[in-house]
Every structure is written in structure tokens, then in C-alpha cells.
Length: 616
Image (cartoon, rainbow, N blue to C red; front, side, top):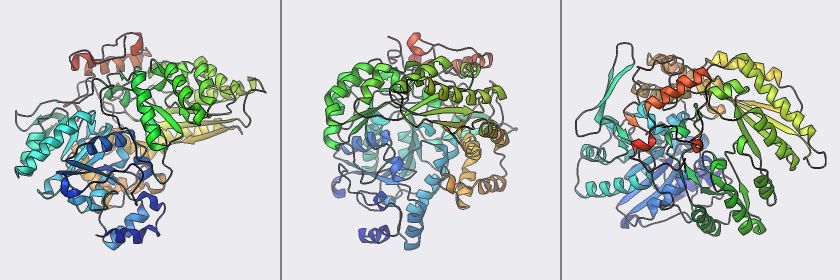
């Protein structure tokens, strides 16, 4: 395949910049002078994948090695895919434009359950067998990482292995082992048997699942006592010493997060009971301000970006946030470089911070009350109240803002109709608060955007035992809000319940679902997270063809004795803690967040102490 073959297609597709490569700071090597070629694969379009911080870190980390060349590959949009299949052009990497089937390793980051058919589609486009058992020594190893890898069971027959946890250390061990195996010309099975001994690596083919008669899991056991009965995730203990790139690729086109991203800490101090990330990314570890200032200087100098985002699960919980923001603005404000703070919590919204930030550039404000009543916010352990929200939006309005986004979930455990009505009540109170602000200080053109997502019970959370609402229940609740939110200043956006239903199926799924994924892909399912391409009826046909009831996974509550398909994976948060949090949720009891004292989640004991910075 020549580069000219690809170039011929670019004038016929939307956004050809997705496929051309050659961006500033992308890395090129002589393939004859490296031992390992890796394709870092993001199973969605370029502009989403290039916004992912993990992609930026691991791409550069692997390319720091002289013996490794890591290139990028994204899911081609449907117009490009159609042309590639018609012209016989296989899936190719952006840097070399060579087919990824000839690479040694293809590593997929799995951020969202609805990308699974894109993984299958990309393997098909590459000409690589979809099932791991059908691959031979000349095929690349297919590995997965990211949050969905913690329950990779629906993909167990497709992936050769998963990397659980943070990849900066484990990737070096994996690459070293691969080079040794490649030189010794071992079998594919031999490599999998060796890589399974690396902490944080899970090889599904070396574990077998025992089922009960009712279809639930009895146990997941290794096929040999050599392999751990429980696979422990990997973490980086000291973020000040961990690798972070000095430069990032600068795309030719706009991407979702088109800015410098500074990772200020990992983990979360809070403990929202619906949030998988807040559980699986523990323990809390912060970077020092001096480290962040040094990284910011290098990234701004090497990219030319005019905006910087301070990234974490809950940015306003960074202990030195105000000091850091003021110093960044002092250094870069006169150059017109703005600061954005995602993941702001409404109970720690700082007037001083917002005043500092708006001196350079005014960015949008999004707050996430999550639930419409205090009762339900206590159930989910959100740890904020209505006054927090009113104070926060009031601060924003008094400082010239007129556009605010509010995010909620519907279908949360114990939810009632009053909780749904509470969402509308809060929205109207925000509108009222705008008109109470000084006319000379508030911005013009009030716009309050209310967005609701559908609750999805996730593995490794206190709500993993809960049933999801039915699609019909979600639709009914959305209709209630559509009728209640009738105001010229309020915009209501909602999420498609059918998509959330399938997300719940695969979030708590087992290995039986692998055949459904393949069947749905054969029926044309791909880009399932995009409304215009989502084909719910074909998904239902796939479940029917495979004689599998999706409701078994999404709509069924579990008891505490049931064995989950993911119970052989160790995240560090104990099952006892999660059960305790679930029981407290049903009573409406809150758990203080970690900064107020250790909640004994188990993470410190799991790693032998000294890893969590949540408590001083």
C-alpha cells in the first residue's frame, strides 16, 4: 500500500486532516532500527482520541525508547471506512501510513463500553482475526487498557491481554519481555504465559469461568497455579517522578480538548457512590506545584497553545490550587494564555479563583449537582447542598457570567418523582439567582443548560448491586422534565436511554457477551456512542440471535453473595467497603470525603501503606 493510495481518498471524505498525520511534534523513526512497533489505537474518531491525556502520555513515553516506535491509529469515520473497504486499503498508522497488521502490538485504550464494536471493526479493517484464538505468531498482540479493562470480560475472547491500572511502569516491563520473546522466537502461547506473570497484566485465555445453573458466575480461576488468582492493578506511587511529556502533538484540525493539559493529581478524595473513576483510580496522589509549573513551561513552549487545562477527577480538591492558578496567570496571563478548570465542585467554588481566571479569558462553567433533592444527593454521597449551588452560580453571575451548565443523573437508586421535579426546581432557582445579581455586573443573555444522563450501575462501585431503570422509565422521567423546564432561558438536553441500557449491559457483562458484540458488528453496528449511527433494533436482534437476555445484566439487582464476573480483579478498594457504602446509601447516610479523615476503603492496606495523599 502506497501513501498515494491514501491521498487519493482524502478529497472524498469529511475532515481529511483526521488521516494525514505529519502534525507538529509527531514522532518518526526508521522501522529498521527499532525492535518493537506499537500502534496506539483509540476506537473513536481522531478529534476525540487526540484529546485523551493518556494517549499523549503513553505515545511519548514509548517513543522515548530507542528500541520502540509507537504510532497512532484511530477509528476511520464511516465515509473513510467505506472507501478503504472499496479500494482494499487496510487500517493504517498515521505516522508511517503502513498497515497496522504488520506491527508487533496494537494497544487499545477502552474509555467507554459503546466503543466495543469499533474495536472489532478496526481489527476487521486491519485484516486481523477478531478472536484471539484465531491469531498466529505473525499477527500483532492485541492489548487493552483504560477504565473498561477493569471488567474486560465481554471482550475476553477478542483481546490477548489487558493492562490494569496505570501504564507508565508496566509498559516498559511488557516491551522488554516482548523483545526477549521475539529474539527467542517463542510461540504466541509462551509469550502470553510469561506476560501473565507481570503484575497488572490479565490474560483471559489463562483463566476459565465456571457458571451456576442460573447463569450467574460461580468462579473465575486460573488454568494453572502459576498465575495469580487475583490480578492486582498497577499504580504510580510518586507522580513527581513519573514520566510526563515535554511536548504534545499539535493537530491540524480542531479537537475536543485543543489545549495543554496539566495532570495535577490522580484519584479522588470524594467517594460519590455512582462514580467508577472515583473508586478505581484511588489512591489520591498529587503533584507538587513546582513540578506542574515546570511541565507547563515546557508544554507551552513546545506547542504554542493559548489555553491550559488543569486535569483531574476533581480539580478544585487540589490542595495548592489557588497558589498554582495565580502563579500560572502571573507567568502567562500577559501572553494571553488562559486557564480552564474542569471538574469544579460547587462546594469549593472560589470567588478569588474565578476572578483571577477571567482576567485572561472567560471560560464556560459547568456544575454537577447530580440530583434534584438533598435526600438523593445524600444517597449518592455527593456532599453538596442547594446553598452551595446558589452561592456558586451567584458568584459567577456577579462576575459577568450569564451562561451556566447544570448536569444531573436520572434513574439513581431510591429516586422518586419528587427527585425528578427537584431538578426543574433547581434550574428555576438558578434563573431567579441571575435576576437577583447586580444588573451592572451580570452578563447579558442568560442561558441555563440542564443536561441529564441516565444512571448506569458500574463495576467496583457501591451501586454495582443495583438494577438499572428500564428504557421506558427513563423516557417517562425525561418527559416529566421536558414539560417542567419551559422557560426561554433554559435549554434541556438528555441522553438516549437505549444507549445507556447497552452501556449497563456491557459494564456488568461476562464472557457470554462476546458473541453478541461480534453479531451486532456483523449487523452493521459501529460508532454506537454516536446517535446518528446507533442501531438499537439491530442490537436487540443480535441478543435474540445469541439467545441472551440483556436485561439479565442491566435490569437485575444483585445480592451481596453473588460472584461478579470481575471479582478476580483487584482495584484496592475492598468489597467490604463497597457493601458498607451501599447500605449507607439505602439509609441516606453520607460518608465524609477523604480530606476529612480516612474512610478505610482498603487502598492503603492493598498497597502496603504510604500511597494515599488524601489525608495529610
